[in-house]
Image 1: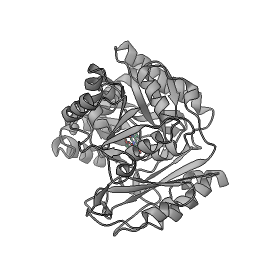
Image 2: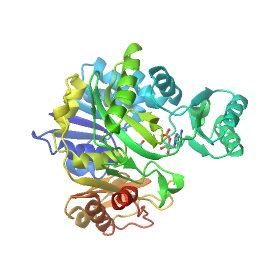
Image 3: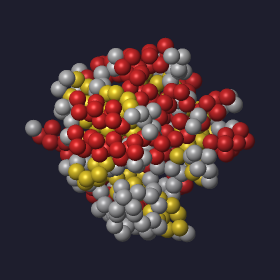
Image 4: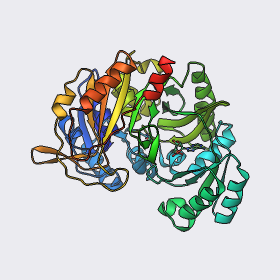
Length: 426
Ligand code: AMP
Ligand code: GLY
């Protein structure tokens, strides 16, 4: 098959890597990709949000399957445009992608469907938002409605912080237009997990569980990031929770969408808080998570191209997704200063040595080629991913690989998967 992967992060490198391990050989193209994807797929120099150019390329080159990685092109309707031209595409249509593109829409769907989630109200008026925040005595969370690159969520432990956060989003427009509408939510406590599911319009096949690490520094401290590491499986998602999440989160949400005439095809990602009162949805994303995908796909033991094609065609079956018994961990190496400002263009050494460690793949995220060298070009630079017969072995391998890679200012968390390791010991 001829396959186009849209996007340029670690997620897309992992997708291309796994697509290449399938039973059949594929011609894989990546738009625009990074230095890592350029080694295993043909680079198409079109940005992931240049939807008109992507469509033109696809009309000229007729890929058998297009896999859309990031949320922005999905929210711009790239999947609809491809489908209208008879091109097979993996990723939801624009209406369905609103589950990520508008947190207010996602909440409305969840409340209508009876999906367990935090209490919440949506506001366009800052005073009313503050009044509601005051009524939530256990702290609250202020969220910009629209896409804000993972930054539009502020956790507030008291009323003063909540009023400041509402001001910042609605008056200061710290998240641009995304903050003209805000949600104020009940603050949930518990442990988080990510559950990604393939959805073919009708059927739901949940992928292996994983856990992200959103804060920049060890011990879940420091500012929020796109994700500093992930591991799979996540033991917080016990066997008993599995059917609850499938029925109460995925099936209910999809039924409600169907009632509204919306068909969901692609990945539906539920960010879940496992609370004392059961699992509750924190957010939906309309795409594979990054860096969860790197850890989850490292464990996939079946043909990814087959599963994605079947999802796009509406003929998904559970046996298309099988897992290795191994555990997997992905440690993100970031540029000095990330998630704030950082330097680009710094040479990276040790990539090939790290890649040679058993069970290890170094997925590129913010990297580029500069002549013969690989250099940094983004905040999250690499996702060093290892599998092992248990989580401890996977963690040991991943950090051994991390220690072989050098670039100026590099930083990573040293405690990826520690929560799960503590659980196994205790
Ligand atoms: P979101 O983009 O909605 O997933 O929010 C980003 C992060 O904020 C989540 O991964 C949680 O760590 C945190 N968060 C979001 N909503 C809540 C909530 N209602 N209670 C506690 N933490 C939350
Ligand atoms: N890892 C969080 C996300 O992909 O949104």
